Length: 196
Image 1 (spheres, one colour):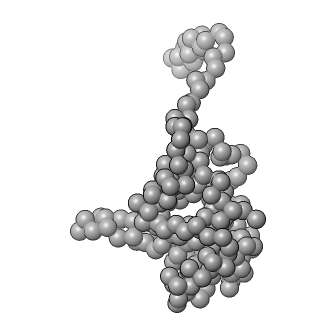
Image 2 (cartoon, one colour):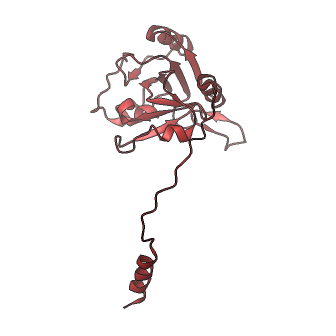
Image 3 (cartoon, rainbow, N blue to C red):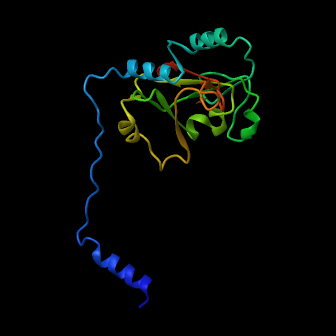
């Protein structure tokens, strides 16, 4: 028996005879947390902006005022029609010239001011990164308290791709000056609007 086989044999013999349950992971949830207020505050810290609206038309009006020059809009949700058609057959790099990318997040995380996006909510993954500006629709009832409670909602088996996104990209590498939108979207706007 060579040394590798001896090591493997010792490892196998040292395994517990009875099955040991994995330890539980606490959620660290706190009673009485205003999830909506916390989400807004933390999103704004990450240079995102948040609006409570009652309709898509109201959200579209806000974006028209914020970005009057934006003409190419691609939408991954039927709630907000885009000017550019998006299907699962759209080539990812075709979204490079897009001004505004619109999608509905599956849920938000108050602790981080972030949203959970998957290939279901993006249709084409590059919509979350190539447009100049991102618009996220989020149901205010779909906000999780922290990352521990959020991971209980994530199904890694149901989706091939998912990411937590918070605010536009940022870097302070050059001259210790904070620059937003250095890579990826230059702005991120969340509209709190119940799911249809």
